[in-house]
Length: 469
Image (tube, rainbow, N blue to C red; front, side):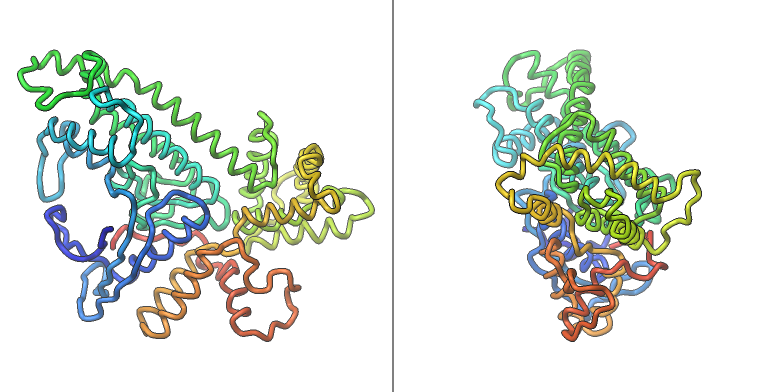
C-alpha cells in the first residue's frame, strides 16, 4: 500500500511530496479503468480530500491523497539508482555513487519475493530477473497500444519491475486516432508519443540491463549467484569485463521484448476484431490497414471499434446497400472531425475494400462459432462488444469530474462514484446503447450515462495535460 501525496519523505528530495485534487482524481479513476480493460496496473483503494491544505502548482490548488495498492512498487529506477550511469544527477542530490552490494540485495529480494522466479538457491538470478521484467513490460505496453492508452512520462522511475502501469500523470486515452499523438504538453520532442511507447519501454529495459550488467557478468563467470560483497577486492578491469559481458545480451533482450509485445498485441487486436484464429498476415492485411483508415478519416479510436462490432459480411451484398451506407455513416459518426475525402478513393470504396478482406476473414472462422450455429454472427457480435469498451475515460469526462469535485465535494463525489462505476464496467451497454439515437429516454441517469459515453466537445479533442501533481 502506498499513499501518493501524503507529504515529504526521505525520497522527496526538493519536492513537497503533495498531490492536488486534479491529479489525484485522474489517477484514482484511471487505475481502475485500466484494470477493467485487462491492462496490468496498480489499483486505487481510496481518495482523500484535504481542503485546508493549499498546494502551489501552476496555480494554488487543494491537496488530496490517493491510497493505491500493488504487489510491489519497485521500479526500474530503483535499480538504476544503485548503479547509475555516469553524469546521472538527482534533483536535490547531485551525482549518486554506485552501491553494488545494495544492488545485489535488492535484486535477490525482487527475484525471490516480488517476481517469485523459479531460480534455485545460490544459482544466478540477475538475467532471469531482467528477462522476466522485460516480458511483463512487453505485455503491459501491448495492452496500452491496443486500448489507445498514452502514459505521458515513461522514464525509468515510472516503469514497474512487475510490468504494472504506474504513476498516472499526463495520461490520455486516444480519441481521434493519431499514431503520433502526444498527451503531455511538456513533451516538446514527442519522446513519449503514442507510437514510440514500445520503444521507450525498451529504452527503460536497457537502463535495467545497464544497472544489472556487472552482476549478470559476474554470475556468468562463476555460474553462481553473486555473493555478499561480491565486487570487493575485484580489479577494475575485471569489473569492467563483467559489465561488458552483461551488456552483450542487449540484442537478445530486445528481440525477446519485441516478440512478446507483437504476440500479445496481435492476440489482443484479434480479440477486439472478433477473430478467434491466428493468421500470420493479420497485422499486414487487417490490423494495420484498419488503423490507417482511422487515421486518414480522423475517426475516434475506441468508438470505431465499437461500431465495427455491428458489421456482418452480408452488408457487402448489393441487396443490403442501404444498410451498408448506414453502417458507414455510423463509422464516420465516431468522430466530430471526420475528414472530407482528400484522397483519390471515395470513402465508401476505401471502406469496402478493407471490409471485404475483413468479411472473408470472418467467414473463414464460421466453424469456430459452431456452438452458436443458430446465429453465430450474433454470438460473434457479442464477443466483440465484450472486448470493445462502450465507456472510455476521456479527457473531457475527467475534466468535468475534476471541476465538479473542486466546486463542491458532496455533489462532486456522486459524479465521481458514477464515473468510477462506468470505468469499472466499460463494456456494459451504458445509456441504453441499443435504443435509437434521438429516441426519447425518460430516465435521467440513463440520459447521463449516454452523455458520458459520448465523444465530448470538439475543443477537447487531443487535450494535453502537464506532469504536475
